[in-house]
Image 1 (cartoon, rainbow, N blue to C red):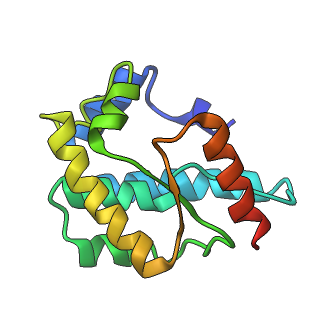
Image 2: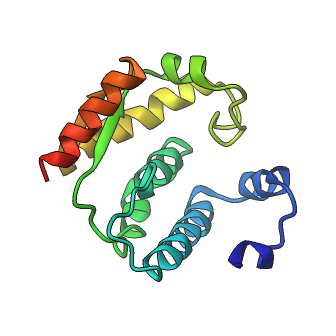
Amino acid sequence: ILSAKLPFRTHGEVFAYLKALSPRSRSHFLFHALHAALDLATAKSPDVLLLNAYWYKYYATETAHGGDPVVLRSLTAGFPEPDVTCYLKTSAETTMARKEQPSDYESGYGDYVSFQRRSLRVLDELSTELGWHEVDGTRSPEDVTTALLKSVALR
C-alpha cells in the first residue's frame, strides 16, 4: 500500500508539512498525491471513477493561498479531462456551517470564511471557463442527489 510508504504517521503531521510549503511546492505535493491515487484507481480498470474536487480544489486553494494562477494551472496539464464535472455552488458561510473542524489549510492559516470566499471565486471562474454543471449546494441532500444524477445522465 502506497500510504504505508509515506513519512507521515498522523493527519497533523501532513498538515504541518503542508503549512511549511509555498503554494507552488504544496501544489506539486498535492498534485503528485492525486496522480498517484488516479494511477491506483485506473489500475483496477473501473467503469466509472467518481472524484471529489479533483485538481480544481487544490488549484483554487493554492491560488487563494497566493500562488501564481498561471504557474499553478500549468501544473494541471497532465490530468485527464473528466467526462462530466458537477459543481456544488454554495457560500463560504454555508460550508463553514457544515464543517465540524476546518483544517488550518482550508482556513488559509487564518479566517476560514474570508479564505474560502477567495477560493470559491476561483472555482466560479473555472466553472464558467470549463462549462461545469452547476448544482445549488444549499438545497436538501435529496435535491442535490437528484440534480447530480440528472447531470451525469446528460452525458
